[in-house]
Length: 260
Image: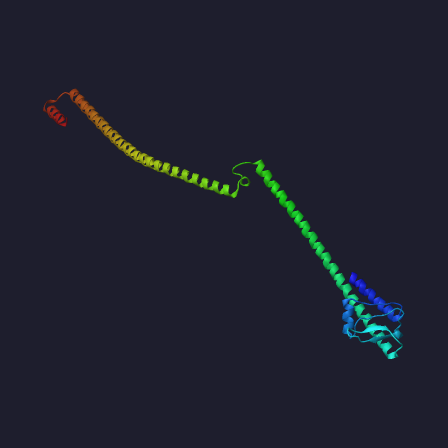
């Protein structure tokens, strides 16, 4: 902004000197040197009291100098005025370019400040979240001070605890396998005993059934024998009641005895 102001003042002073000759302007900026050198001249020097008609150009070793001199031809004066107008136009154009660059720089600076502010807010928010998380973990660790609490042990201690837990599980598994083997032996014994008992019960049941069948058969035979005895007794009683009628009775008696 300071450079733009200096260049604007330089252009204004040059224009005023070209019009009424009441200023002394020595623009020593880089742009003025580039502009004058590109036009084929050196440093522009305007002395107090100089007028457009009293200005002319000299060609020194380092560039063109405009200084008050004796009255010259109108052609030299017109050339000097034209050179001043070209310089003023170039300064104006350069001033506009610098203003646009300044505006762009302001926008970039505003964007950079906004990004910096965003990063600052993000960092502050992240730090706050991290602090809250750490406080929550500390609170949980203090609230539940247990060995099983993952927040209360370090990775090394956790690895040691996991290793010891695996060892305990292996020991328990070995004990269970031993007990299982013993139970298998006992189970085989019980199975064998059960089969033997089942066979014994089956044999006893079969023997009992056979005995019952034999008893039933004997009972039936006895009933039949008793029935036969009763029939024989009835026949004998009938034979005793009827008197024997001679031979016919004897024959009949003999026939009855034969039936007996």
